Image (cartoon, rainbow, N blue to C red; front, side, top):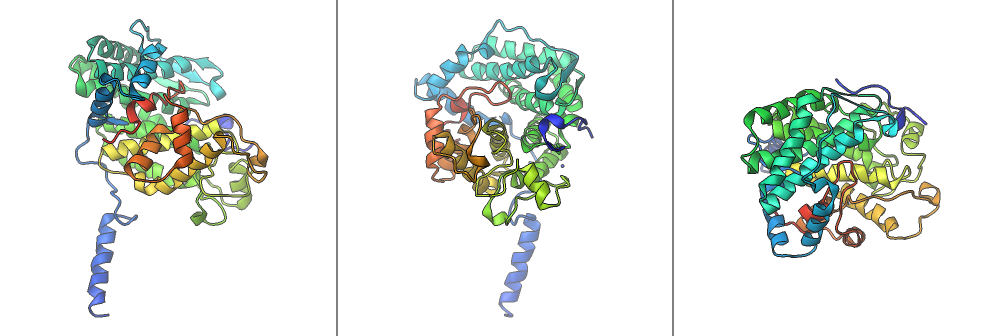
Length: 407
């Protein structure tokens, strides 16, 4: 198709009155001081919260309480996780120096191994926190140490996306182990930090001009890594990427006749935007840039948006209010058709492909339970799909950690 297709990306991304007048002036000054969005925080937290990537200590405590009480859906989700290959105490990590991933992971030289070891480290860290069985912490540490000892690079056309996927899971695991266990030697923690800073962060920090799920996944990795490294500049850069990409990924009628173009994309004309949006010419609230490609890739994008916003909320810079309308409409639109409503002919030619996957729990909990939005279709889909497992890429155990989690 065009250079915007995932599979055609070949270049590496290395390098995102008298009485009224005084009141008006005061209001204007307050707005300017608050930042361009009028009240949104622009800077990274002065002090980072740990653990603070996707799940906070309060959320982990809530999860542990529910599991120990045998409450549903958390106990069922925990049992599902513990029965998975990712929770195995006999897992042998498979690190390699250079992970080579071509289009759609062909060739696949360490791609699956890296992603699954990263998910396993996160899974084991959750198992450790909930059970307090130190063997799970030790196994998570073993996996993280194995990779930090050898990996130096990611290569081939899917390198940025692969780095984003694995790089989203690693800091989740590292945050839990580093800040809730004493079993990880400081020298190994430092080596893991070096791995994230030198191998992963340079690959994801500048974003991608590919399909939106690429840049969103890369940005999720960047913000998680920034939290673990306590790197305020990297955090701010990731937030800036997020703020540019989300409005270009999810359409709202308030955008105008056409979707917004991502900053730096070079999409200047109607034809270019339509082509980038998979040929779709009718735009409605909640349509995403990849809806007409397939729902699976759309799910990747929506999951990353939710996960980034969740991390920001934990860190005291809540991005949910900025994206709430886009995210709730997007989840609701895709969920409606996942639930079986006939696809109209104006939408993707009347056919939607594939499925979202286990991606709705984080966003639904934030938007519905915390912010009070009515989300009938998303609720039905989320509850029907419980317990949400993993997509084996970067999404994992959302029902366990985020179902109705008030913290």
